[in-house]
Picture 1 (cartoon, one colour):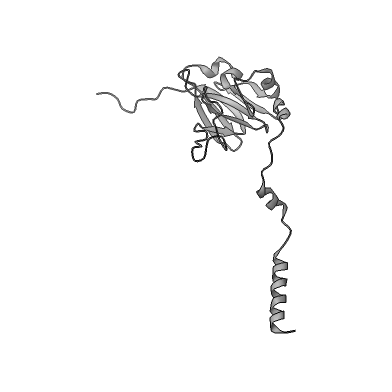
Picture 2 (cartoon, helix red, strand yellow):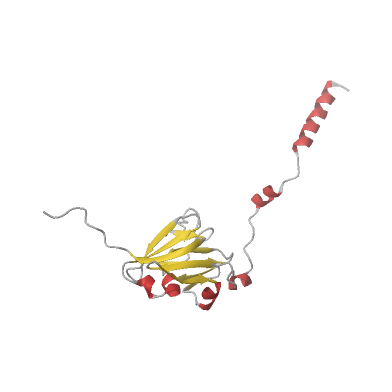
Length: 184
């Protein structure tokens, strides 16, 4: 063989060894999994369970049966959301009340009771995938436009705080702040 043909063979072998079958992780990066069918949005996962504490005393937990028995306050094709006050009762809507959602890693989100009809309200949301999120929602737009629905470069997303996969809700009345100085 000539040097030129040896060089060509080497290039062909190098290219052949560089090509390989794509892995499963590469396939996952190419296309997202489609959402579950609409029929599954009716079912509430049996694994839903949030311990609830009102003023330091445990009360009935929020579970799949309780959510199924309560009509959602907010509803669209992909989400259902219940006001915390709907699920827990008037304790969550008292003046000065705070709903603290606690996540499995110790993160906590404190949400005050709304002061007026247009103020964000603490709510528990369930999406089509069965994921639970607790956070503040705007009563007039509880599910803000997000990917693909907000317009290119004008997708503000959800500006209100939320906590995914909560494990516990605590409801209490916040103490009035203590004045740092005394008048003279």
